[in-house]
Amino acid sequence: MTNEQLLREGAEQIGIKDLRTDLFLSYVDLLRKWGKRVNLTSVLTDREIIIKHLIDSLTVAEFVPPGSRVLDVGTGAGFPGIPLSIYDSSLRVTLVESVGKKVAFLKHAKRSLGLSSVDIHHARAEDLTKGMNRSFDRVTSRAVGSMDAVIALGAPYLDIEGEMVIMKGPRGKDEWEDYANRYPEDMELLFTKELKLPFSGENRVIIVTKPVYRPMETKA
Ligand code: SAM
Picture 1 (cartoon, rainbow, N blue to C red):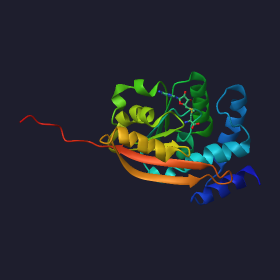
Picture 2 (tube, rainbow, N blue to C red; picture 1 turned 90 degrees about the vertical axis):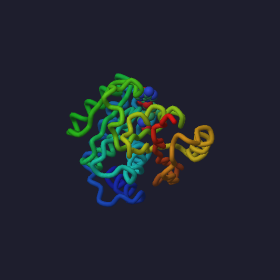
Picture 3 (cartoon, protein in one colour; picture 1 turned 180 degrees about the horizontal axis):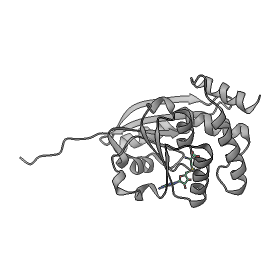
């Protein structure tokens, strides 16, 4: 199977039809070339980049409406932010990454792929410009840390109706339940989606959640 067939077939298996593949395939080339120089991802064959990174990233597309302002915290080599931005050019995607060599790759990828609606910040997510608080419709995160850490990093950036889309491995539901038991009043669970990645069959869990906003307390 060619890379293009793998990408199309994988996308179809997660419900995405008629994927335009040219930019995705250019991104695979960049990841392969840079991955050798910089430790971008541990997975480097084209097949694994396509299945474990690109298709996996696209599994959250259904939770990110067109036109959304998206913040991807701890994006690494651009997952899931870059695949989302290639898939839907109406998204305004901001990538945040703390490691300089990964940011250099992201900037190169943005230029090479012509991703004009992608913004890149070299920062720790907790130190991002203050003006960005409550500025995003969706905050995404994939493989960035514990449920507590990811929510603490991402929630301050959500606009009032904003949602966090958290990508987890097979234990994602347990991690959510553990979090919700400890902080029952902080976040509302909107969706949980369990799925198997095409071809590899690996289990993934997507948690979609939003902060519970309380009316300001008034003094009697
Ligand atoms: N999301 C990417 C993926 O799925 O391939 C990268 C995952 S990698 C395991 C975690 C990334 O988060 C690393 O590149 C790390 O530098 C970045 N990171 C961790 N904590 C961060 C923080 N507080 N602010 C910004 N980036 C952070």
